[in-house]
Image (cartoon, rainbow, N blue to C red; front, top):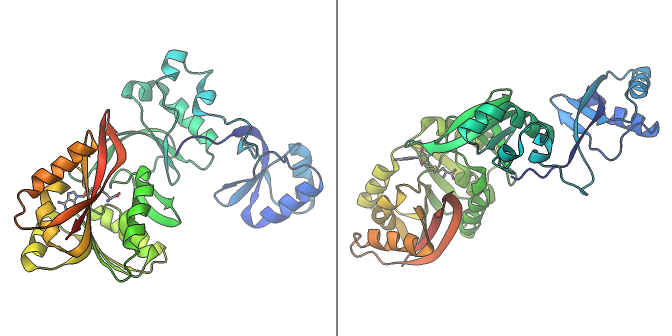
Length: 359
Ligand SMILES: C[S@@+](CC[C@H](N)C(=O)[O-])C[C@H]1O[C@@H](n2cnc3c(N)ncnc32)[C@H](O)[C@@H]1O
């Protein structure tokens, strides 16, 4: 998500949530509500921006509404000018360094993740965290995001400011996903891809799906939210599956998700040997998934689809990776339905999804 929220510092009154409506009505009636700014929610309180804080507090107290003064950055209702992260840092960071601070950052639940050099993180981390939390008052912690490492693809992080926590609930197209950015893979930039694949699968009610590298289960959750189906969601990271099980309980799902802690390379081999067939197989492990392609092609029914992800410089390279690998799968007929660039991975390197249909 890009930092495009306009925000202005102002005086406000914080009142308990259950008094919110009454307080707002009272302040509006007394012309004390600062109309161009938005009322903001914080824990169990709501904070109302006001034109005169002393008067506002006096009026609320006369109505027996508990309240306290809070000066903070309120989101603006106007979109005339968008404040940016760099606007907030301009007075504090020299111009040459300011230009190296990214304009945008990811938001996962109440956590912001920004790509930063270690040197910039050490020097300006606390200022950047402060600025992001001013821009987005709902953000509680800010981390510098490094690369994902190891077999479980967990991200390296540097804490920059706020309240240190890595577990949060992220909302992705109406689905609550329990995430722990320090212990399991999750990338909010894949949201559209999760939806896209789920919308293809939803055309087959009652489908049997294998999400072989599920992580915290975003594909599985999107699919099970849309249609009645059976999803086997596998991962080697047991903690990721614990989070997925929490998400299953949090969301109203139409389909059933079975979260399995297995090595999916071995599972695909066993399915191939046993002749067990799925309607769809998702293989989102771009570094390695292609290795299991022959087994996957044998474990999908005729006209069934495989969504396999890989890292390549171009569409042609992604396609030839698949073609080369499938030379090893003797006697399996398939066609490539789609080659789609999904994400940037490194300079001039991308993550691709190839959709294969078993013919
Ligand atoms: C790139 S993440 C994909 C997560 C998920 N599909 C998503 O869209 O957010 C790859 C996942 O594969 C898991 N993984 C790696 N090797 C595995 C294996 N041999 N068997 C099962 N899961 C594996 C990792 O733990 C990680 O969660």
